[in-house]
Length: 66
Length: 241
Image 1: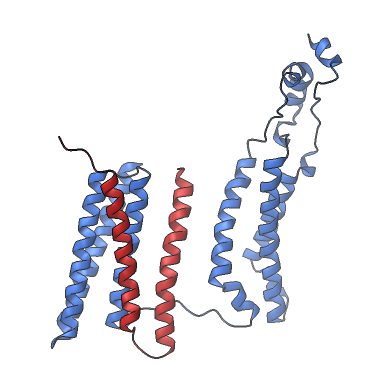
Image 2 (image 1 turned 120 degrees about the vertical axis):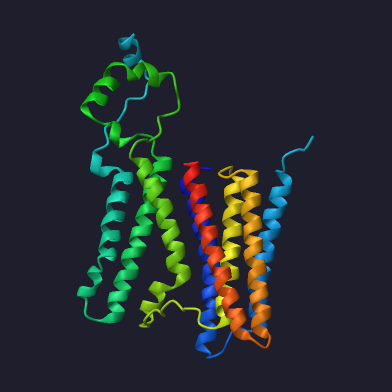
């Protein structure tokens, strides 16, 4: 994949993630409250999903041991 | 041979399209002009806020449409305007008829048309940001776009740090899948991210305990680890260039 396409893909993906987080914080601050446990769980589940994706890709491309 | 080719009724004679009549060139020029007009806020010369915002919206829209017209012309138009120089015309008059008459596929546009393609990609990204971020829509509604929220509470800082870890995982996965980093580098990065996440979880546990200050200090330490991880990734990126 050309570098510019990879950069654009990453830009859009990370931008969407950041926008989701900023939306959560902005909503909470506008309501004058802290993040709720459910909102924290949403952030954690995104981490878990990204971790699982990387694990799967690493497992698929793991070097063969003798 | 040239005479035979020139008398062949099936031979395609290159048609000289004037430079400024090319849809690619016009699309790029209009896109650049309207994009520049929106960039430098020429619509601010209009006094009414809503009308100025509407003009801004129209300028950006025209810019995007023009870029897509350029892309469409790039795909569908068979002749390249950049080849229509005196030299290329001489070449076409002398040698091209023999070549052209043996092929039914006209040459695709090349050269600076790729600039239009790159610009179109960039504008697509801008369009996504504009229309999903609602910056222009906010202006249309006469509302000042809200400032970016800054994490202030522990939970907000914790969520931001976890989200940064998620972004690092996503980046690592994308770079690994296209072969920009090796398996060992990806594994090493994942281990560092896991260490940061563990530190964040410990900080959260401490913050919920009797001494929340400990949680704050642990969170600060985890953020330092994130900075170190960023430095590592930057070094890896520099090493692959």
